[in-house]
Image 1 (cartoon, rainbow, N blue to C red):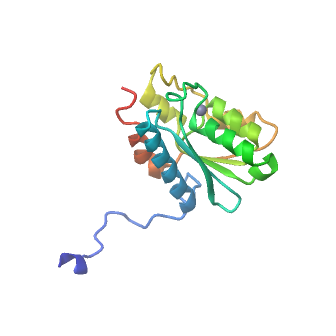
Image 2: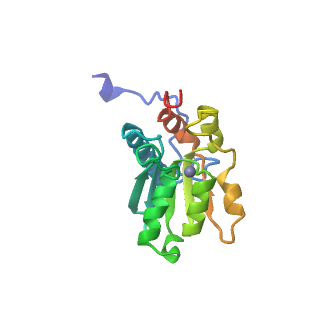
Image 3: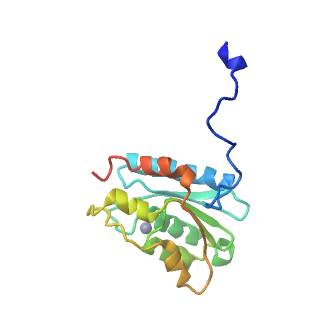
Amino acid sequence: MAETTAPSASSEPSPTPKSAPGSALSSDDLERLRVTILVASSSRVNGNHPFGSVLTDAAGTVVLEAENTVVTARDATGHAETNLVRLASSRYSPAELADFTLYTSTEPCAMCSGAIYWAGIGRVVFALAEADLYAITGENEENPTMRLPCREVFAAGQRETAVAGPAPELHAEATAVHAGFWG
Ligand SMILES: [Zn+2]
């Protein structure tokens, strides 16, 4: 019975804003990042590293998704973003991809940022910062995380790649998918 008369005794001072302060992420961005974390979880279940990415077209529709395949494909370049870029480049031109967005559970490494740049994908949104991943993986030989923010890679390019992230509101979820994985 309490449910029908429950006062709004939430400790939250206000509803979730459309765009979180500091992150510049819309509610749609956050929704798609949650999907990348689900893809990362699936990647882990499938025997690979817990990373996932999705691609949206100019209309915001998810058109592709990719898991990490480093372990099962025995491919050191099988990061989720690079796998996604490979698929995207085979289907879309750079002119089309300029209006697409790549969402990813963790900030793209230098290799993946390079792949995203060469494909011409116009925007990247990530949930967990690479520095936070570094704190999780440490010096794990399976994932010797680089300390190079993707913005620095993109800044060296000749065309602009918009970047948004990390997403503080998804920090717990984006971290949880790595829990216990890296020892
Ligand atoms: Zn990568």
